[in-house]
Length: 359
Figure (cartoon, rainbow, N blue to C red):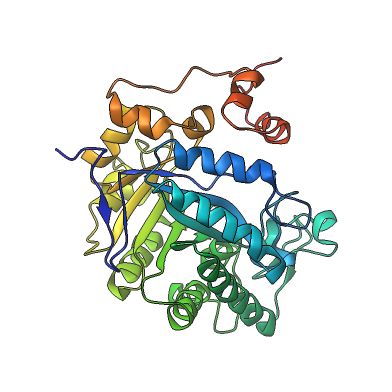
């Protein structure tokens, strides 16, 4: 039986000291210009001190027109480099593997935040998003690559491409959303071309030891599970990706697509050949037992979200006690402050019904 305390090694020679990774969690704690604040630095370094084998930033926007949230961390310009370097340095001081997540919200970029209509692979009347020109597609590909280079120079040991939750990379992958007629639309091979071009650019411009991963949704957001399995196989076969982060919402849930009726998402993806590519899974992992279940059922490591918000030291507690479980919700704001959340982050968490108690 694998232990949560086991180290996880990656094909490019990097490693994390245990099987628990901090999920990329939106927290709206950065400065309005995307530079790192003391509040966000405190929140993330507390998790590194709390024993997480890897500490990942929130989704950090790579292009001003791709901002998805107010006070979102950014890695889109050199003005962000000093804060990124400070954060990477202090995560690594705690022997936690430092990863920056790279993000473009696409159609989910609020127009009042970015000052113009959001971008999308195809026009979207529901959000007012306009179709990206071919030149704009290449501009954003280059923005992802430039952001990866910037994060590498800042000292991060890895970068993750946010291809999940219906953001821009996922919008290109979706046969429902992506109705383009150029080389980035049509077949899955074409629709995946946006993501694959970013990967190729990062591998071209960054050192081989930079850990590169992709976060994917296995269903919803206009995606087909069969296509996500096919893409998963392509990424594995390419040997350009160190790990795939599957955001499942619930690691025990059954697949929605009728083609896979009666099968769980976990068995579909953990059972698929992956060679030397590692698999991390996220979704309702609230206890040491949940994390151990994920590993026992084929994942290489567990990616912790809300339980890491509730406990900065969830990783240390879960590794020490197989019976440890997240405190019950709703959680009093004072308890969340003690866990390193700013008042702004606490207010944001009220969006999630039942998480924050009334003061």
